[in-house]
Length: 281
Image (cartoon, rainbow, N blue to C red):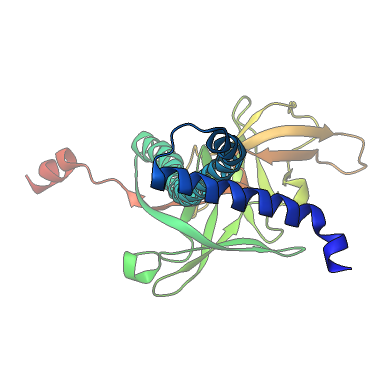
């Protein structure tokens, strides 16, 4: 049964062995290019070719494997470098955006005749009625309750609670907030109140007064909290249909309270060296 199944293999093996034997015999006795030797060479040539192809295939496959391993390692290193560069670019981009914000705040500080203390927003409280921020400056930096807080392009609120190294800012839209304001165009004065998600409202301006959508609202300076002339917002809606004596005026603050990251605390008037020298004389 064994010989029946493998007789073809055994026959080829026998032919190859015979050819190799005859070839080695001819070389040993230098019998010249006999017919037997030529037959042996002819039979051995395909085997040698097949063996050479197998060796070359294995060698090429190993070379490709080594090359692929090297490429995979190089690809991993490149991915790591790309990740590091992307992280560095993100930091540079964040730094650039922060520099732009700080430059804008600096321009605001230079435009206003007051002394400011810059602070970073470190927390938010957005309850149903309370709209507040927490900043990273406090008593140690000279802050006190009641100081106005500004961001581009104008007023955003005032300090209410101050600890050693932090402070709470009550925003203009907080329903407990109030400020004396006036309409820039007509100089009509009223009281600004926070209205939460609706922005702010102005009360106590008579219905006979001319207040229009788009009018700019400024602080009036009547209270001891906010200096006169700070930008607050603009009128977005007026209503005379109410049965009362006063207009219903809704105001949208200029500042975007949802994106505040840095603010300026108005800490007092700027020192005037000329005035100080004059007073000294």
